[in-house]
Length: 181
Image (tube, rainbow, N blue to C red; front, side, top):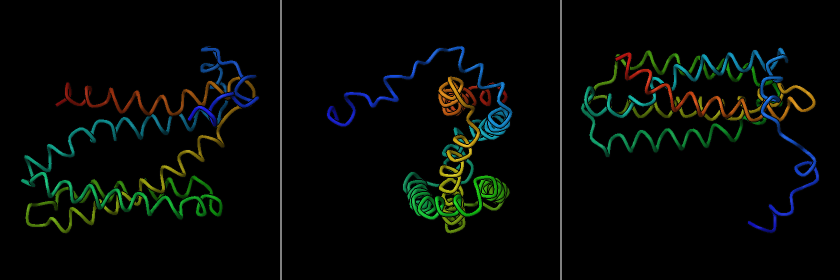
């Protein structure tokens, strides 16, 4: 790893990051729209994600092997969804793919009322379906971030703020949902 990483490329050596650059990113309207959408999206996901496995263990009655099976199906479809996502983003843009992902997640959450221990096939297929949505979203979401970046030093702040926000929310949201529940 040392050879490809060091020395830093000229862009990395010349760039200087100052914390105030994060705040400057909020003055750029496309990034602000991206930021608010990601905030709303990940608050919901963050609150729900921590409870997927306990829900399927305690409410549905699946065992750990059955949970592992739907997670494998999810990850296979995630990878397969990412393969064509780049071409789809190039052709249609990130926004339509993000709309498709939101639709997929809406169907996913509506399917929870049909999940029972006897319908493992439905659970596995639904998780595979949502894996496809996540594959599309990972590519489209990054494309949306890059297309929303401001110019100049605020660009570095936005690049730190965008993904940082997701990690922060995904870490804090389960705590909020625990207090709520």
